[in-house]
Length: 219
Image (cartoon, rainbow, N blue to C red; front, side, top):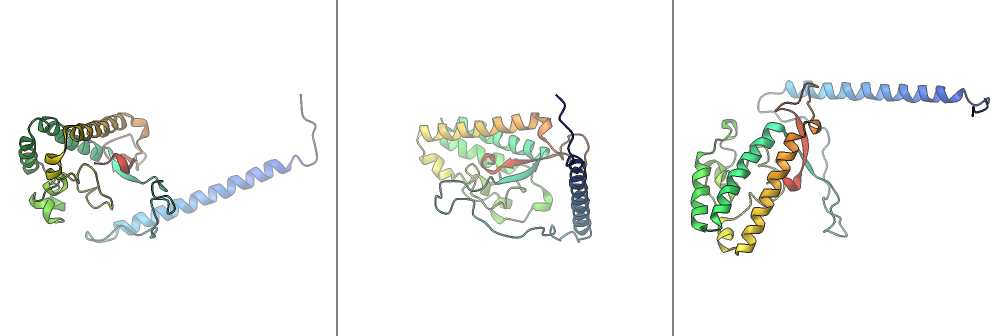
């Protein structure tokens, strides 16, 4: 059935065209702003900081009900960084599984592994405990990666105290190992879903492509 023509009908294309024009104008403004910020960042000296776009604070938990998350906090990581985290956690997992049978062996193996892990030379000296491989947690030993080292949160895996590991029951150790396995499964699945990764230069998916990784799956 064809709808009858009315005098008001020609207004629709005009409104649609106006909406499209406003959207196009907004996109142009956003593109110009993004370009200006990139240029400002590139003109800064080596020791400069990323230009501030938005500076504020907020609560990640409901003020009236702290158990309820008010935000979905994510960290923008590259595909190469995710692979790096996977390799680090896989090494920790292997030694944790062996450590359930011999806690002292677990500690010795972790310290030996931390001593041989490569670090980004440009980041050396940023934190004394991490750089020297001293302390009592996995982060202190040098397992925390530079790109998540300064995040304002307390990580479960990297905050693990070696004293706590020795004092844990077998059930607690098994639960920890299971959580490690879950994180590794997530890393592998995310890495292989290339359609989820975004290339900032609009090119093919590569090691520099990025994805907003949920905070709770970080180590």
